[in-house]
Length: 369
Image 1 (tube, rainbow, N blue to C red):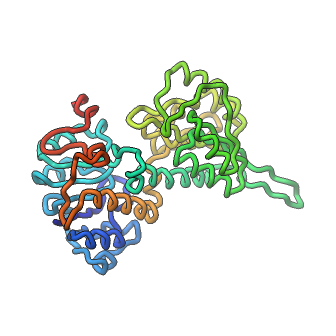
Image 2 (cartoon, one colour):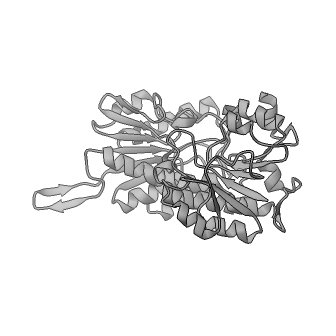
Image 3 (cartoon, rainbow, N blue to C red):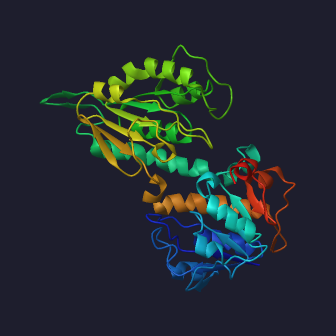
């Protein structure tokens, strides 16, 4: 069976779904690999490197000519229509925002796996691309904030006086939030963080940051669940003072499959010191910050709000390295004796499967359609 790795075509996407090292692992599993010429250029993986790893370099997109297509972003509709019955796709695909594509995949009887739907269980961790890319996003968020902040992050003691360290507040302590905390600490900032999950407190403190103890009920789960508007209103009231006292706010709070909760209001932004910076990592899913827009800088008075958009793509080398390994690991779960034959009785594969045999298997998407 042949696996195809295309050059990504969606705007500003610089990652690639396979690298020479993962080509080697796919070949070891008995698969043949076709790589579209130039697919890895942004990740500094040349056609020659892919060829040396054993891949065949092809001039065009592999949709319709290979049995499996590995992508980062979802296929566009024209390429999806080239797929044949029984073909397999693996990549990010948020079905609620790609309903037309889901229809095409179902009509073509394609077996489509979405890494956005991958169950968050221990056995699936090696394929958890949401987490690996969140790590990149959390790191980049702090670097963006430091770039825009008109002040130092670390403390400096000089002959001209002492410069105090910047105060950084991180809202949400999942993978992205924890990486933002760690990066801000490495750069010398004083960091505090808040998360609705009880287990997050220990993780925050282990990184040397202060965990905000709010007089609010906490959640026991590993992942945050959606909260009522009344809860969010109380939460905003309690964190307003800490937002105002911060030089940098990085917001990362998200609920899978739901609109991001609003944590920072316009009044909070206006209370921050002039020159402060807010980076909203949830901008693409509705935003934690009122008024943030994906990919744009918005000024609220003298406070800059940066709406993050696809931050992992800004670090294509390492983001691709992590993502390609996630994809190869997921493909490994469905490959036996040189054939990709997904066993949909497997909970991990079943959970990530969006369409199969003409059916939309993901119930919430089926309801939307």
